[in-house]
Amino acid sequence: MHCGMCLPTCPTYDTTKRERNSPRGRIALMRAIAEDELPVTREFADEMSYCLGCLACQTACPAGVDYATLFETARADIEQARINPSPTRGFYRFVTLHLLFIHPRLLRVFGKLLRFYQTSGAETLVRKLHLTRLLPANLRRLEPQTPRISEKFSNELIAPLEQPATDPVKHRVALLTGCIQDIAFSEINRDTADVLLANSCEVHTPPVQPCCGSIHSHNGETELARDVARRLINLIPPEKFDAIITNAGGCGSHLRHYTHLLEDDPDYSSRARLWDQKIQDIHEFLAKIQIRPPTAAPFDDETKVTYHDSCHLTHGQKVTLQPRQIIDLIPGLKRVELPEANWCCGSAGVYSITQPEQATLLLNRKVEKIQSTGATHLLTANPGCHLQIQNAMPALKVIHPISVLAQAYRNESISLN
Image 1 (tube, helix red, strand yellow):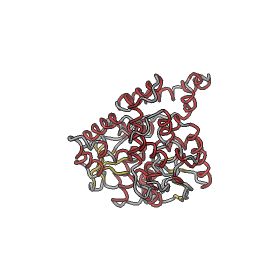
Image 2 (cartoon, helix red, strand yellow):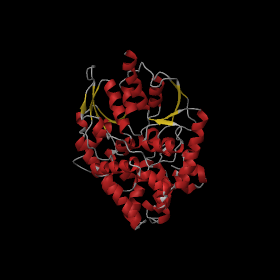
Image 3 (spheres, one colour):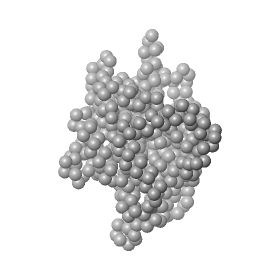
Image 4 (cartoon, rainbow, N blue to C red):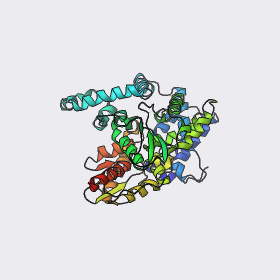
């Protein structure tokens, strides 16, 4: 396809107006490499790094070109070609991709240590003494944006099996707790479980869950992504549940593509197809089962809110209307539509580290649009977006839509009393 309908939707092309920085240009490069007209070079690696992977082009494409798969395949080819060898890069990739995001218990240990650092006064002392100057430039810039680690993780907040207190069980679901969501936003997982219980669901939440593999796929580690996909399917057999629930836009988009990831695995290909059928975003699932509208407001006063679309929730999962429908069902909220609601905020996984200038441009643009709404609360359903916007706008209350819904349900019992 050469029509160019993707060009106006691409944040990097919008910035540079250069064909090579557009989806069409990148696909041309990929094709040239696939047909042995060009080698895999450092220049190609830089271009793939400059791409956000936001998938806005995929939504715009009239032919349905699967850019997500092309993008991940290109990054895998780059890693196999060893275009970017460096001891520092290799160390960070090993620690994150091969250790922390492969072993969930180890990630939780790291989270506990980081929380101790944040709450013991050590973080304050390090900043006061300007010791962060010893960090590499990229990490030094991002250090103030380190997520605040939750006091308790998901396994400490949610029992492996929970059932509705009064209503009969209508749906049997499994809840995915994620990685960053588990250690930094565990309360969102608890809220998700409460909302499911309030809608007559039996909720199964394995206490120790591996990463979904999205961070591995997006960074060219396809075999690691396949390995964690198998582990997750073994842990949560899709045939046992009516739905498998995810509440993070980026994770959910990857979780829906296990069929492609494991299509050549004779032991898992059929189970992967069933898995993809059972995966549902929490907003999507609630809309399908006809959510019970809450009767109480989540906040004391009428609250003006706006909603930011996570790129992978809207472009990767095509879930756009359902979150807005749920927000509009909640009493006491006045929703104002956010201009350019589905324009990337610049988070995009590790994009803030690899492409700080472009990430800042996108973030500033997003902040300007949010400010134009006059909203006091921004609702969004992805941890990366949550952190990116909250760090830029500390006075703004950033919250997951399901957390607002959960609070409304809880306030029902208060109003009855």
